[in-house]
Amino acid sequence: MKKRVIHWFKFASPQNFYELAGKLWPWFAALATLLMIVGLWIGFFVAPVDAQQGQGYRIIFVHVPASQMAMFIYLVMAAWAGVGLMFNTRLSGMMAQALAPTGALFAFLSLLTGALWGKPMWGAWWVWDARLTSTLILLFLYLGFMALQASIDDPRRADKAGAVLALVGAVNVPIIYFSVKWWNTLHQGASVSLKGSSMASTMLTGMLVMVVAFWMYAIAMALVRVRNIILEREQHTDWVKHAVA
Image (cartoon, rainbow, N blue to C red):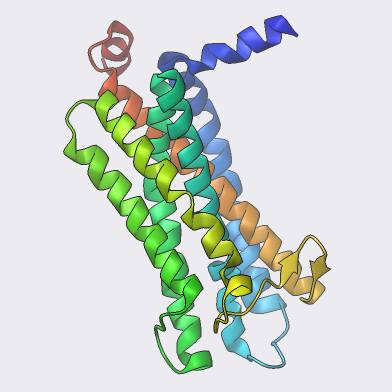
């Protein structure tokens, strides 16, 4: 057991993780592409028309997974940043930086698809609903994290400053999740929970496939981006010079 732990700890080295990420990201990218095609096909062509919302409900096959990933990636980013802040590990800050753009993309996609769904259902592109507003704050937190890191020249200082922001901003995630329960909002509650689902089996299948597809995409993009960050930060080392050459 001790040897296995030591074996996995070697990937805390940016050089070793760079090689591992290079082997893994194509597989996650391929799975993301395949699952996204299957999920969109089920969601837009196989799943039945909703009795109340008609064809317009199909936007949820993108909106719900994007919303979930926007929240989850922020928590993972904050966790990596917190580990880097506590133990001063280089790779932790790099992973947090690598995750932020993908999380921001999903937050933006959540707001965009929510607006496309809200116009025909609510009669407005935007309302200052508790969940919408807190999701907008989440997008600003992602953008603020990236802007803060970009504004500091020293990567280690940038990691520490970004970690503080990420950890403080993490309190917004449970606010997003529980907003429909804590306040009287226009946004509907969860259709899928640990207690079961109110969706038809075909709809649920398409939704779950899209969730996994977005997971695979997020992992692939994080691995690709962290490899670039490693090359940039470790450019003074011999192994990077050799790899680039």
